[in-house]
Amino acid sequence: MSIFGDALGVAIARVHAAQGAPVVVYTCVGESPVTIAAVWDAPHKAVDLATGELSDIEPSIGIRLADLPAAVDVDEDTLTIDGVGYRPTDLQPDGQGGARLALRKVI
Image 1 (cartoon, helix red, strand yellow):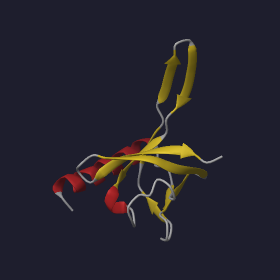
Image 2 (image 1 turned 180 degrees about the horizontal axis):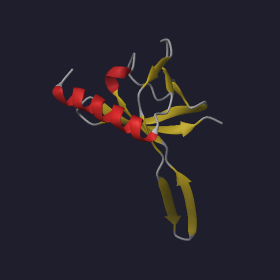
Image 3 (image 1 turned 90 degrees about the horizontal axis):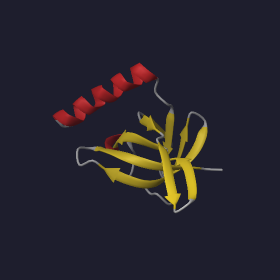
Image 4 (image 1 turned 135 degrees about the vertical axis):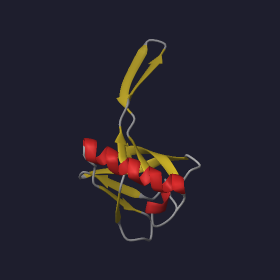
């Protein structure tokens, strides 16, 4: 692992200690489920369609790509975060071994 990757792992551990880590079980297609470390984020997202205001949250997690058993498949993979089901919708790698994974709640 790179020096940055090691430092990122330490930073994630500190965030988890400070705010409580979500339990994330990630299931890649064709692989066994794994529990991974993640930083949860669900910022408010407001959309104004010229008078039809829409308000929602946009859940995502920050992850280390090395924690996943396979490449992310946004069409097939599933996640369970603290008992709630999600599917990934977009993977945004940061170029340093981490990524933001946008999520959609499974209903």
